[in-house]
Image (cartoon, rainbow, N blue to C red; front, side):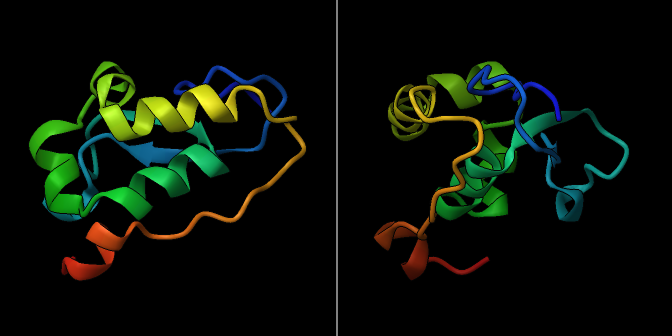
Amino acid sequence: MGTCELCSRNDVETTVHHLLPKEMGGTFEPTANLCIPCHKQIHALYTNAEIASRLTSIAELREDAQLSRFIKWVRKQPATKLMKIKKSNDRRRKRK
């Protein structure tokens, strides 16, 4: 259990998010510990190419319009709640 670096919720299960996706050369680049809902939301909204081009820091992720709305909502959720995350319609139309 830890703290999510994106939404700042405490006592959540965290996963390692590569700020620069591994397939884009980020294997040994900086990572962030994110709660599962935040991590899933990033990948549901954006392709790895989009993440690599403009969302490679916690600050950039927090400032993103779609993610900031999600973060505002998820902060109010209990740490034990795991919610379903669906790919956005835009993301569904895009390839990896």
